[in-house]
Amino acid sequence: MTNQYMPGPKTREIVNRDKAVISPSYPRAYPFVMEHGRGVDVWDVDGNRYLDFAAGIAVVATGHSHPQVVKAIQDQVEKFIHISPDFYHPSMVELGEKLDDIAPFKEKAVSFFTNSGTESVEGAIKLARYYTGRDVIIGFLGAFHGRTMGAVTVTASKSLYHEGFYPLMNGVLHAPFPDPYRPILASQPGEDYGQSVVRFIEEQLIGHLVPANEIAAILVEPIQGEGGYILPPPSFFPALRALCDRHGILLVVDEVQSGMGRTGKWWAIEHYGVEPDVVCAAKGIASGMPLGAVIAKEHIMCWPYGAHGNTYGGNPLACVAALATIDLVEKEYMDNAAGVGKYMLDALEEIQTRHANVIGQVRGLGLMIGVEFVKDVITKEPAKELRDKITEKAFEHGLLLLGCGKSVIRFAPPLSVTQQQVDEALQIFEEALAISEKEVLVAA
Ligand code: PLP
Image (cartoon, rainbow, N blue to C red; front, side):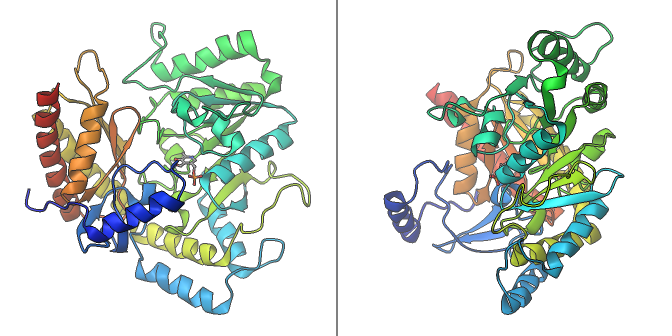
């Protein structure tokens, strides 16, 4: 490896000042202190350049400070910065129309705007309860939906998210997520694992625990994000949709991480040929401006005047940034995510062949790719220490990555990333992997 960046003096100074006044709860993996960014490149306050394959946790869809997004925000900032959704403004309506165009269902889509992913999930839970008049929400083990009280109750990726916060919201149950690499339920002959999980919900949860007519919604990520970039088998969503239809349960998909073109389609659920009833969006929607949306079928978004609202939802700067983002994703970056994503997946699979004793699985769709590290490919024991070391070494050599699950590294660059940038990033990644393998194995 040529570059080796150690935290410079300015980085150290900011990190020390941060420690004194910023909540210690933020999960910082390494000390990257950003100075500026362009596209996939970011620079720290000491002048070091990095490739950003984390994209602010899968947020900056069009790259950092895309000129078209910047221009849209600049033009809007001169006009007005805020008015609140208790009044009207044109870009909020235009964005609602655009989301109707791209929503993953045929019925007209109606949107409620939020400021974050967790607020979108919170809104969807309230809407599901309001619309159905039922209480119970079924979520999945390994899920991440955010950290406000309703969303965090359904979140089940780490018990840390619940520790010290009980009592959580009433009426939430969890089923195993259909992780084909680590199945925890037995399948019947002729059944695939997605169907086994749906059978578990029907026979065990509904059969033994909660009557179907108490269940408002099943809340699910089409691809589990924080839980480990896990793709369910193709049979899962059709079977889940059928179960929802049998019992009048809403299918709410959390596309906060997987949506807005990241997987090569607007919504990851489209890969599974199923229409949800409600979609939660955020992250990539506005290239980094804080915006989210609850996007529901028109007949479901039926709550009355005043029943739900907020102060900042549909902020004009965020709306114009979202419109510019959607334009760029539609014209160019969604196809790029599919094409470059496939290129990266193939390249990572090739890397797996050279490190077959520690890489258990490479999986993903578009630019949502996870590499799972194991201590032993037969037992699949998670290699967390190795994953953490690789992430740290990649950072030291100019590549920003983030972990997820127990021992997975996620690759979630801006949707504008090029093949050359992928080549550069994967060279750093493989070198970081080789160094880390030696260090972790020597220490063991
Ligand atoms: N839902 C999913 C699938 C997420 O990945 C996240 C964040 O990582 C959230 C919800 C919560 O979003 P936010 O951090 O904006 O509240």
